[in-house]
Image (cartoon, rainbow, N blue to C red; front, side):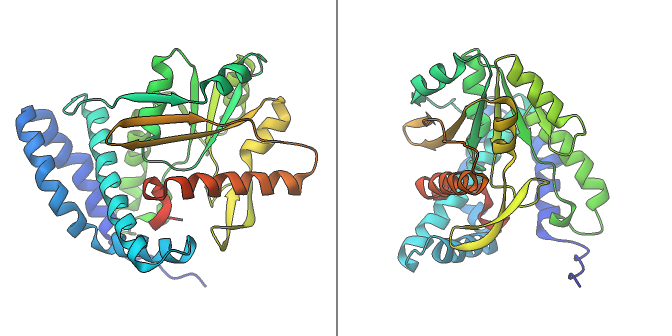
Length: 296
């Protein structure tokens, strides 16, 4: 028997602050005040998210087999990227560009250009990366048609008292943050992805989704858990390539990389092994920028 969800959780309060008071303040405040507020948040946010930081450090230690002295700094970096992601979301939701856009660098662009030449579309495979919103915007700025497959909020993330009120509003926020997207729960989800690929466009899919109709149990990051094989199913159906896609930010800007197409053949077990290895590689390459340390 599963444990009953609590009436209230910290996530309820954090979501409410972001959705209402914070957005109101950002809309009404001058840029210099917002920059000062960001400096203050750099010190306050790690204290507010202290439990999340400790949980992330523990899981980094166990899942990546890291010593304590490496896991703790990574967890602090994880919280810093989480705060930066909050700034980006707030800017998109309010229309206020109160920080300089990152300098974008592309790597492996030839892999994407070559894959698009087949006129069957391209599937980009990624994990939940903090910079994916900015990366999608950068691709669209290059005239690429990108449909993002997003997953709506799970009711279990919120307390019982406000879940019915928060979940639909959070879904509307997600649709605003990803305007050209389709929810995995949408009955027309597969049809929309097929249509985009047949137009020669791009579909971006995150594979580290534990709750998915296409989920299978695998050994991922040294633990037994589920990942989504939707990208493989769609690739076999459309006969289109699957390219690894990573987006990582640092002081130099935003680096977007397209890998070489994954080998997708008739052996389902081999395909799942290839998918799992690629998702693991992406997490290990930029562990502090993986969103799922406290949610997976």
